[in-house]
Image (cartoon, rainbow, N blue to C red; front, side, top):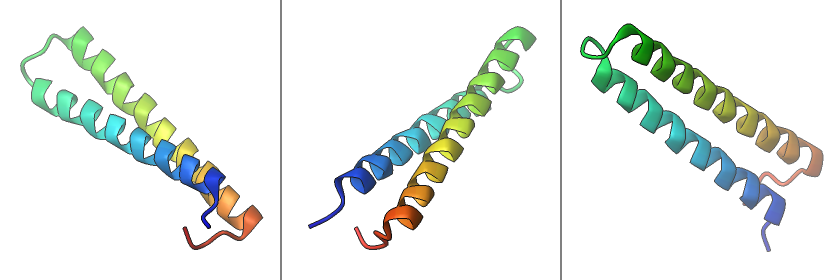
Length: 72
């Protein structure tokens, strides 16, 4: 039987990664064609979603270490 907390943290990390990928894709599509203000806003969105990826990865890593649940 797997660890429910680990599964939840893995799901949160995966979702954060998908949000980051989507934000980055939008930013890349707008390079050179968007007004500077829009580019800055999109860039901040990328930074925010990357920070969420890092937070969820840290939470997952800490959980794995604390609970020794290396195998899903």
